[in-house]
Length: 88
Image (cartoon, rainbow, N blue to C red):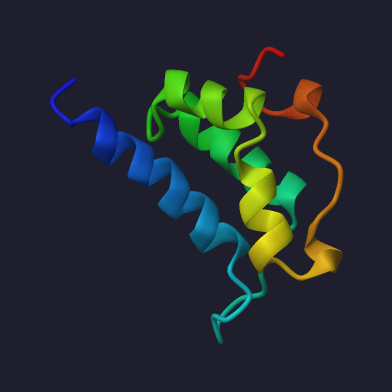
């Protein structure tokens, strides 16, 4: 509650971008399903705001970014029923 909604929203976006970025020399970019699974675990561990994560997933806010910036091989199907802690 001490962190603004804007900052918590940026945290979700930043974590997603960091997990999927393929321009890092020390790691390959994760697929959508891999990144979102990691973020689900982070939500369960209270590192991500659960309500904002719900909005991110329910409204598929990750898709426009993915379609614009990710390698097509990274864009896989996201099975919402398999996201840790998320209830579709």
